[in-house]
Structures are given as C-alpha cells and as structure tokens.
Length: 239
Length: 258
Image (tube, rainbow over all chains, first blue to last red; front, top):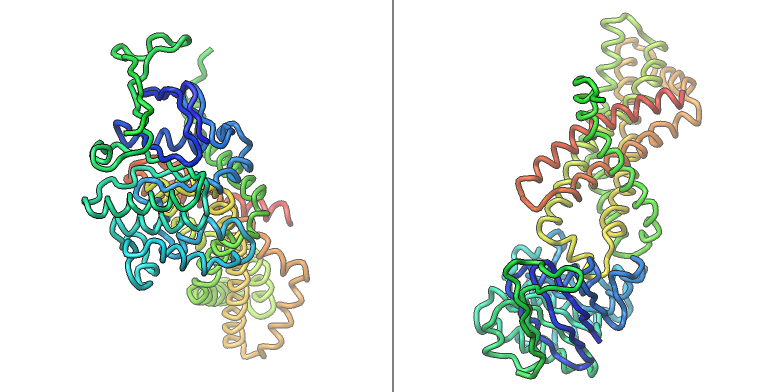
C-alpha cells in the first residue's frame, strides 16, 4: 500500500490518497521535474516539503539507511530512460541489483532471466547480441526493455515507472505499456504506479486510478506559498 | 575587528584545500565503514576491475620508467658525483627504492586512476546513474567508493613493488656495466642495506598514497554539479590537489617513519 498524506512540494501538491494492493495508478504531473520529485520521495531519497509518503506502511525517508536500502529491494523502479549504468554491458545492468544483494551468484538467476525474456516475447529483441552492448548503443525503447527485465528479476511487489513511455513513438509506447500492465496482472496484490507527464497516455490508454498534481496551495503553517496558488482538486476515480 | 588583508587572502586560499581534506576524510571513512560490503558479488567485480586498471594494466609502462630511473640515478651518481660501486648501490636502495618509488607511483596513479575515477563518477552523476543506483537499493559507498578506494590502494602497492624491482635491476645493471664487478656482489650490498621491514615500506606508503588519491578523486567526482562543463574542472582539481597530497603525504611519512 502506498499512502500520500498532505503531500506537497514547493511547486505542486497531491491530495491524500491510498494506493491499494492490486491497483494500477497513474499520477499525471506537469513536468519531468515533478515526476522526479515524487519518485525521490517515494524511494525515500528525500522528504517532501510538506506531508509524508508511506510505502508499505513505512516512511522510507525516516528509516535508517540500511533499512531503507533493504526496503527498496522489494520495490521495482524504472527511472526515466531506464536508468542503466553506462559503464556496464546491458546484461550486467540487468543482473546488478540481484548480484549486489548476494555474495555468491544468485541461485536460478539464469532460468529467471530466460523466463523474463520469454515474458517480454516480441517486445524483446531476438538473440543476445544487444545484451552484450553498452547501454549507449541501444535505442530508448531497448533501454527501457532492459530496465524492465532488471525490474522483473528483482520480483517486486510494488512497481514504479517514471515516464515509462516518454519520447517513444506510438507503437513502442503501446507495447511497453501493455507489457507493464501484463506484468502487473501476473501477481495479485502488486501495486503499479506510473509517474507520467504525457496527457496522451491518459486519453488513449488509461483505465486505472488517476491522480493529478495540482499547484501548491496554502497550508496552516504557510498560508501563502505562491502568490498565484489556487487549490485544485485531484480526482481518484477509474477513468 | 577586521583582519588584515593578507590574513584574509590566506584564509580564502586555504578554504578549498580544507574542504577537500575534510571531504576526502569523509569519503575515506565511508569506504572503511562500508568495506564489509565488498563481499557482495557486484562490489567485488568493481574491486577486481579497479585493481586491474591501477595495478596490472600499467605494468609495462611502470617497469620501463623504473628501469630508466634506476639507470639514470646510478649514472648521475657515478658520472657527475663520482660516487661508484657499493656507495651508489646503497644510495640507490635508500633513496630511490625506499622513497622515490612510492612518490613516483603515487603520481602515476594520480594521472591515470585519479583522473579516470573523477571523470567516471562525475559523468555518472550528470547522467542520473548515481540516483538510479540509490533507487535500486544500492548504496554508492558500497558499490562505487569502497571498491575504488581499496582497489587503488592495492593497485598502488603492486605498482610500488614493480617499481622497486625495476629500479633495482636498472641501477644494478648499470653499476655492473660501469665497474665490471659481478652482479652478485652488488646484489649483496643492496640486500645488506635493506632490512626485512624496509621491504614493506614502499608498498605501505603506496597503499596510503593510493587510498588518499582515490578519496580525493571520488570527492571531486561526487560534488560535480549538473553541467557537463564542470567535469574538466573537477578533473583539474583532482590533479592539483592530488599532487599536493602525494607530495605532502610522502614527505610526512618519510619524516615519521624514519
């Protein structure tokens, strides 16, 4: 479960919301910076300017470092553009989180990897040539597929996608979104959160829960954060 | 009360070195604190790569440089200062092998690994890869800092060892050629002038110098701002401050350990 309580950053805010297990949730934002801000708060890298975000009932930002890092291993995150490390070949990028967690080669990782590639099916490039390349030689779409494989290997109960479909042409956008939604349905109780600033996605594809960012309004402690601030409502309803 | 201008200028010019010293010490402490994570497979791979790049890849270059240094040192002593035979061999062991090798190796490591580490970490930061690591639950200290610091320290120890061997061979070979004495007799003099503990001295100095260079390089890489034009500035800062560090650390160790 993910909970937003009185969440606000300097430029925007979200109304209180609880993202229940098994739901797909789209948080529609105005800019890439806003999606990065929310993701940083969700991952506990920093606290919001006001309010709190609870992931699995815990405020990650308030946790001691080791516990926060441990908690993040159950959360699969695909940052903007995949977030692959440019110095590692694609296959090492995919295995990195699992390899970091263990002393020895993770047991059964090869089978899991093959299974993940099979799951992606036609979305994945055939053959393994592309896995040996450095990420800079891949297209934006391939990079996100690699990041998706990496996410699958960490077997998360919460998936967070930051601008998953941004800057992709129509068919690739649809294929990637379909993949993420199929993966969501693979395990009951999984929470998927899409942080997007592309309204097209909403118009064309969305049918889950929707949250919208709104310009930051007054709070009891700070009645006038911005001269032009107006408090807007967010809707939490199936589209 | 306002301090006189020279004091203010001095304080201003000391600001950055003090910042780097404190930043480097924090990095050094973090690497030590998270060294237990080197048992993790991904961190071990980074450590092995760093040892290879710092301590194995430059093997040929370092051997050539060390042979030339040993050769030139003995040539200088015998041709210019008229010091020959056993005396030049003793001077070779006490000054070049013991003192010069960690210093030269520190400079080699600074120009190769120091610059590379700063540029790599700065580029990772600017491309959002550091953030990406944090989002995956991988802490930067365990994956980036500790393996680099320990890798450079071990690599510099190896380089000091090669340098010591190369210098000795270069110097002794020239001594043998100039004096027509046997290689064995010069080798005996070299072995007599070095105690068992002395053999640990260059690698120990190398390790301290190497870890300091890595800490400075990581510090400048991590504090680079978002703009790509800042990377060359960070590399220059690593070079200049690293050079001061190598010189000061080696001088201090020479004073303290002797």
